[in-house]
View 1: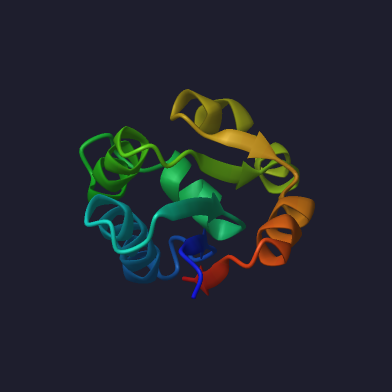
View 2: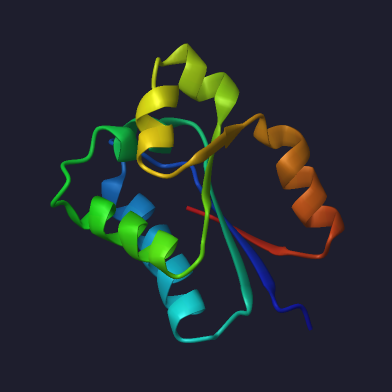
Length: 116
C-alpha cells in the first residue's frame, strides 16, 4: 500500500466548496499523519481562485496551514502565465512550473491521485 498522495485542485470559483474540500483533505492527511507524503497541485481554475482569495478566507487559511505542515503548493506555469497570476502565486508560497511532467512523475512513483 502506498503512503504517497497527490491532491490536484482543479476546481475554482465555479465550485469553491469542492476546491476547499480537497485542500482540507490534503491538510488533514498530513497533519493527522494519515498519509506520510502529501503533495498539492493547483491546476486550471483553482489558480485564479486561490490567487484572488482574501487573506482571511478559508482558502487562504488552508493554504497557510499546508505550507506550515511542509506541503509546498505547486501551480501550473502555463495557466498562471496566461492569466497573469504567476507573481501572485509565488508571493503566496507556490512553486510555479509546467505540471504535465510533474503529475506524470508522481504517477510513476505510485502516488495515489485525488482530484477536486
